[in-house]
Each structure stands twice: as C-alpha cells, then as structure tokens.
Image 1 (cartoon, one colour):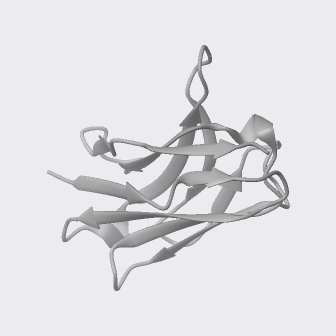
Image 2 (tube, rainbow, N blue to C red):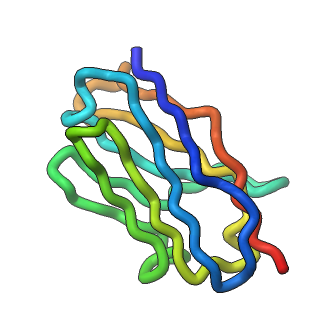
Length: 118
C-alpha cells in the first residue's frame, strides 16, 4: 500500500509561482513512476507531468517551459514547480504513483487545490 499526501496548493495571481509536494509513504518509491494530474471543474482529469524511476520526464504541451517535475528518492517526495501560472491552470492537482510493469501499483493522493486568479 502506498499513501500519497499532497501539499503546497493555494491561491496565486496570474504570473505567479507555486511548488507542490507529494510525500509517499512507501519503501518502493525509487521504482515508482510519479506523476501530477489535474482536474478542472467540468473537465476530465488530465496529465500534467510524469517522472519515471530513472528520471525521464514527460510534460503536457500546455505546461512545457513553465512547470518542472522533480523527485527526491531519499525523501520519497515528488515536486511540481509551477511558474508563470495562468487562470487556466486552476484545478485540483493530484499526485499519482504507478509502475509500468506492475499494474497493481497504481495509487492516487487526495488532491490539492490550485487557484490562479487576480
């Protein structure tokens, strides 16, 4: 069982920055692919960014150049640095832990709200 706890959400003005954190309670963090997803009101959940166990990253086109995902295997934590935030980035952001070779390893956090508004 993997428990994920997100933090760092909040209200920020357009053009501002936030850093989200996701702490995982597990001894197998280093083999997990970690990801950030978001869901805006009335929309489907969408991928924001992922980082594989080896460090390979993947970003949605809408956030490339503005968001950066990183992981600290020693701290069992994944981060999402969000810069140049736009109102359309407003959503609940979810952390996900998974492994491409073990389908049973698929866990979600409870989500953290990010609101970009003046």
